[in-house]
Length: 340
Image (cartoon, rainbow, N blue to C red; front, top):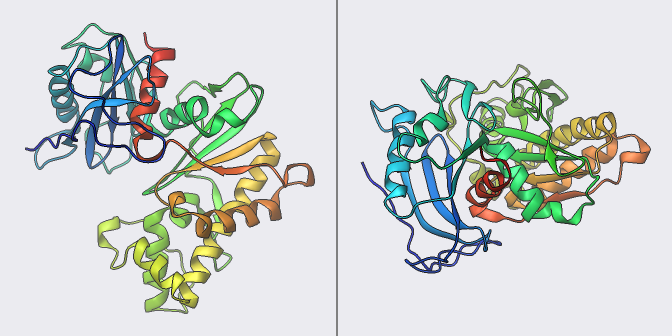
């Protein structure tokens, strides 16, 4: 079992500063954790420098025969050897009862995760207050207060959309707060329906996530006449990756162009309808797929303009700013404002 420590003092990309050295910055700090299906990242963020991360580390999420909750326990123990935090902030997959951190629901990709009590795990080792939420909601909160959201007025109503291995979302309501509900699922956009490049309808995550775009290419390259649904499956089973599809797109491959532009325009049309239904002030895009840039963002924008009512057609569609360290920076910001 390995723990890959990031070198202190290494420059963090796209808006985040890395560690200032082993001694860190004096004053209160937050221990932030980002729990993913592959790894659990942790780091400390000083209150006085909310985009500065020190003492970073990772542990694998699901090594063979080990539950992810046990790896969260391991990550917390390893982190607390570095410093003692004033509070702990955690972004986690699934439907999370915030801010306490009970996992209400999760899909089949993380066995045994539902029912986990994140605050309970933390409090085995420290009495520091804890704030937890779904990982996309955490990112949206941090991005709103420290990144792209700073360009919007306080009364803005925004959708934060993460396109990556999956599709996730969060709504920020006037006052800069996350929309809340009885279960913690507010912002779950993966089950919305959109059209693909063939004009067929399916759930957003089956059409616009990174693995799904690659899966579309693999399926239609093998059988151009395929008219059935192209269902979600294990990304590791796909014979081509999204970066490879984008390379073919750049080389003028007609099928790659059709899928990327068609599927994402379909997503944009769904977002346009949502923008009108909720009278959104703007949409902020994050996640690894959106980081590809204009080849991804432009067809979404065109679809949004197609489908939104006239007053909503020109709402801003902007990329996130916090970059690769956003999950930890955002978890710390959420904990500073919401820890109990």
